[in-house]
Length: 269
Length: 86
Image 1: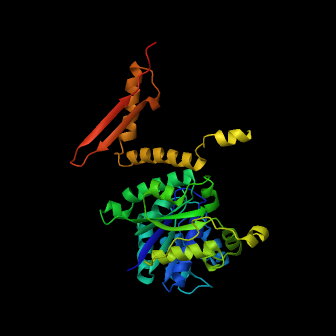
Image 2: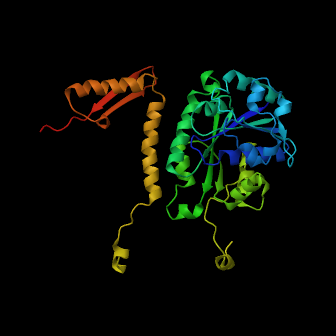
Image 3: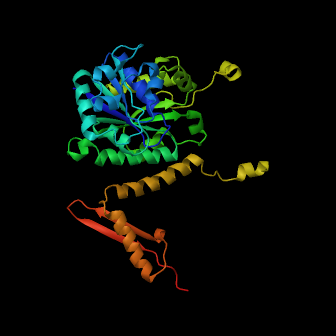
């Protein structure tokens, strides 16, 4: 049975698209047929992070409007097999996404894919509501920072009242916390909310902690999802998160300050 | 700051502690409003307007809370801090 997973946050710039790209790639690497859908209509960016921006011909809205079929719009990832991207359109029409249209496309994707990752836009407007409406699972991407945590709590409220599962009185959307841009060093000095703090406030299970990492910018510069970079902490942390998402038990890494050895102190890491 | 102060000074709470406390308050407040019916904000505003006809108060001097109890019982709690008499 296909699973619809929304990557959401409320606040912008916390790493939704980075996480969507990494998690979708991670699932595909594990052999699951996966599609990642960009819901940020008008501000398409997932294609850039996935490195397929020059291969976009048709998009999500074209498919909804019947101007193209799914196979024409889906972009097959060149690096990872089992992985496809459905890009957002650049239209400025805010009403391009309708519940009926999105539902129809997701139903069609369900026939073919094991995982459908919905990359939500920021905010609580139509795009964000459409991205979360059909979800079975929500990955609430949060930075250890006050405005991000507050917005995540708002989104949790939406998931509990405005999603299809809530409206139809089905089993609630499974909510998971993904803490990104985490800096154990700053947590140790009391400058940053800890994993435990954010878990306590939002009160949802933890999917993973992604450390603040230079690898993320490098990855987006080159259009290669950061999970491919298995040398980096962020890449490894995303792999752990994907493993947990598929039911494996993996211990949290990169949550405590790394004790620097003598040589590392001198030469840096 | 002298060396002596360093030993004497009480540890001020870190900014992360402040952040957590502020979040706990605002999130609790947010959740209180989450389950409230759609008419609630408008009703709250109108209650404040009515009180203002008689007493000059700020909106933060009024707390209106709707508590949902288990057995189909909702309680509307209204708390107004009136200004001190001159």
